[in-house]
Image (cartoon, rainbow, N blue to C red; front, side, top):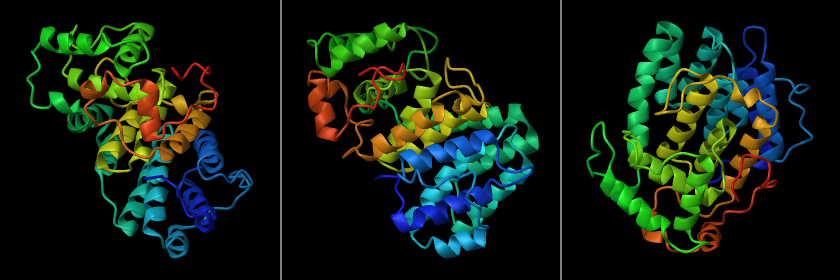
Length: 321
């Protein structure tokens, strides 16, 4: 389901977002850069200059945006912009909470960010760890669900399955999966212990099919791609988790340690918005299919089946295409 807004509603949504982040001393530079990138790449309105456009209050936004899908998109982008305020403030948190209440939305983001502001990073980190376990379980490789993970030691049975998939001929998904790991310089899932090994199989197969690399900017962009590919609770959780780890900076994800403000890096906001748009053009969700079952299928054929288009710049350092 594309994360699109009907053309007549784009400007009211953008004005509403500007109003919702106009707290404390006003929107931050990073929030404005991210919003401008989304406006240009996703909603295709380069004529709208968010630094010159006035904001609207919540009541005016709700009155102007009467489409339920557009309201959801408004809220989803607002949560992303909330992550881009450093440090997160009570005023920004309250603004998002008011929007959620008025629109009838509820979700883990409200509890996680409230915990962060009220009780500090350590409590928020613990809450995030519980959320991440649910999110990772929901996105684990389907044929591995229910299979025990050896605690504290390698998983030779998993390694054998992964190696079998990787032994497929050049051009197939399985062969590309091996090359992905060789480029990334990390061992295949199961070679080392991790409670997330079953998740890593599906997650990294998704990296391969989408053609997105493993830089911090690319990890956030992949999660954005997922959410627009099919906008459901599971894929929304992927973007929220990625934004917390790489942008809000109060949660770790396995071996990936928290960092803050990556969308302020040069080109990162444009990459995020471009992958939101590219994911929206897909015709289905390939992130939760049985990847072992299609490991022998040519990668080009899988991409064609799901409408995965090439990125605008495959050689930008954030893609493996």
